[in-house]
Length: 85
Image 1 (cartoon, rainbow, N blue to C red):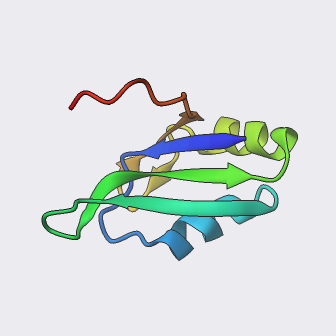
Image 2 (spheres, rainbow, N blue to C red):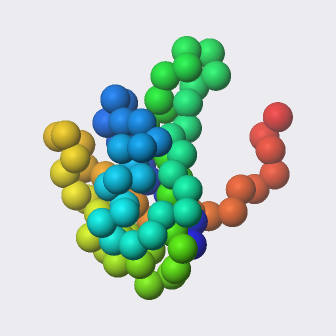
């Protein structure tokens, strides 16, 4: 299951995100989205977990959790629509 994670601390790395979610199950991938112009975090990312039960537990436990003074937004990722370009 693919999970959207928003309102991340800007200092967070892919490894920090992986570590945060690994407490709830096996993480297949964790990626912070970076700004192309500045190469800085955009404050959100995606985590893919190996099984749905672990992903649902992580979503339930981490949504609105306080991480470094920021309240996370965690939910199941939606499929991307057509590009707006």
